[in-house]
Every structure is written in C-alpha cells, then in structure tokens.
Length: 112
Image (cartoon, rainbow, N blue to C red; front, side):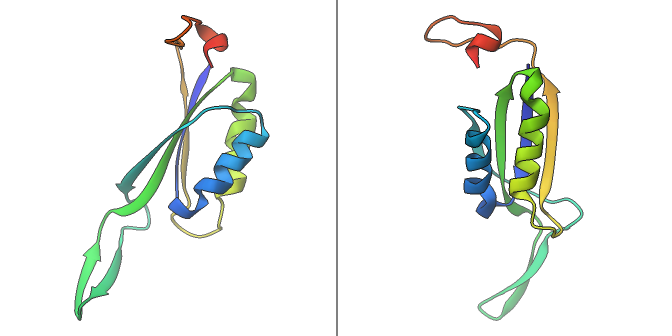
C-alpha cells in the first residue's frame, strides 16, 4: 500500500477528485494549506498599498492506494492538476505500512 500526497492549485480540486473517482479510488482526504516553491509568492495591491504574499493557498490531497494502483493514481492526479504554469504543485508517494478500518477492524488492502 502507498500513500499518495499531492499539493495542487485549489481550482483543480474537482478535476482531480473526478479523475481519482474514475479510477475506482473511493476515498481521499483534502486539506487547505499554504506554501511556496519556485513561485516564491506574489505581489498584490490592497487599498493602494503593495504587499507580498509569501505563502500561496494550495490544496493537499492524501489518498491511500494499493501498490498496483499507485502509478495510475499519480498519472490521474498529474493529468487533472496540470495547467502548464509554475505552481502546479507536487506529488509524493510514501510507503504505507498498515491501514485499519476502525468500524470493521479490517486491515491491509481490505481497509482501503
């Protein structure tokens, strides 16, 4: 099992969710986060004053998948979140040692 973590632009969330649902992935966790990478923030004007926004709003998606679904999940997220612009985000894949469904006690791939 793997944990796929993606940091994406907020307006791409629905497209990514639809892509993962289309692959048969049933659950995911979404968190609103802030951060920066190569973008290094941006400058905005508010009430005539210029200020720098160093941390940009992003969406963090976490989804646990079976090893054989990992590459499909990564490709689905990458294709759906891509705008060909700086700041599209990153995808991380982590090894998931164990998963347990609290309600039934199922563990491993059955818990996904």
